[in-house]
Length: 63
View (spheres, rainbow, N blue to C red):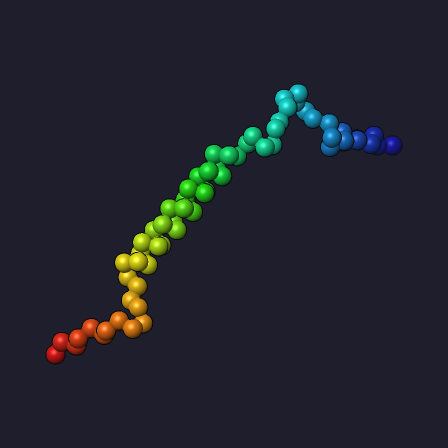
């Protein structure tokens, strides 16, 4: 008869270090937020530099 190997319950921790999930990942979150702000500022500046209003006069054709 084969021996049955039982796994320990998932609630048992292998290390005694306490982990506070709210203290990890703030650097990555801040980096992503900074990249989002930079992307929005860049898109707005490109929009302001290249947008033509619908009622703007057409460029004169050069023949």
